[in-house]
Length: 354
Image (cartoon, rainbow, N blue to C red; front, side, top):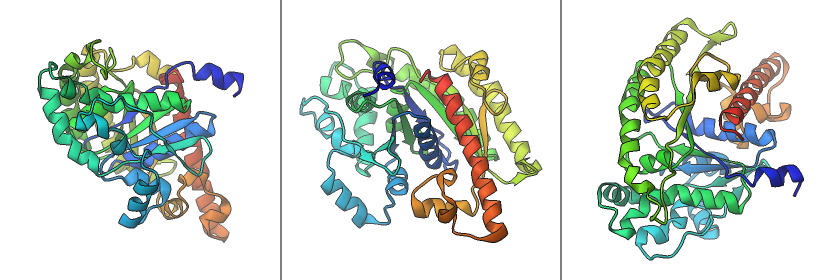
């Protein structure tokens, strides 16, 4: 191990949640792409599939059906998050052991797979969050989820953990988010996302209050003493025009940004749950507070990305599988996405003190 790597791994890897309870905002794609970009920059990255639908697992490993998942769970029993938490949810009292993340096609990028059984844990988590902490078997459930990620990161000398969350405000997401150190909100330019930001301004501070009793030192698996800090949004899924978002999309990007700054940020600040504007700007984001980056639709590149289980910006010329002017156009688009995600990864590195 190099001296640089040794120095880095003495510090606990930050957990960064990617969360928005509105669907269709590219949380899964962003988790994969940002993780790959950080891995390109020398970080050892663990991406975690915290969505019972397991889209991140299918995307990264190229799974196409139930047989692929069944074989994976049988052959790699310690590589999915639900199996690693089984002892806690059964109340056996057996301590958590690190998970065994799986390799991806990038040597610095690792995956802790999802499992539909996570959905079955939701009811138990909901009960445990509303039940007295005097019952140890229940009191240790909420904090166990992110504790598993932390001990796994330490065991495998991970530099940063990214968590892909489902689009819901259930107990599972409450535990993922409140057990994290930072969170980022992917967004889409539309009315429904504006409404989702308004909702988050109520939900997230309430979650902070809910888990306060689970920060007690006497618990085996507790939440961090401090709540996670909001790093910003990522504006996505728009059609580009002349190097930027088309006018109709820019309108909604601005509306979402305004809602973040006027509704979400003030409530988060009251709970010390966001980075300061000065900290945000010091990370050299691609847009004004609190918009970390603008990322256009991947369009025709997405098919090749899915075929090769790589981000669009990591596709080789041969993997793009085109010729002539079409190839040149798609290469230019790919290279633009590479610059965007490289910049986003650098900003995240600064904001989370990687």
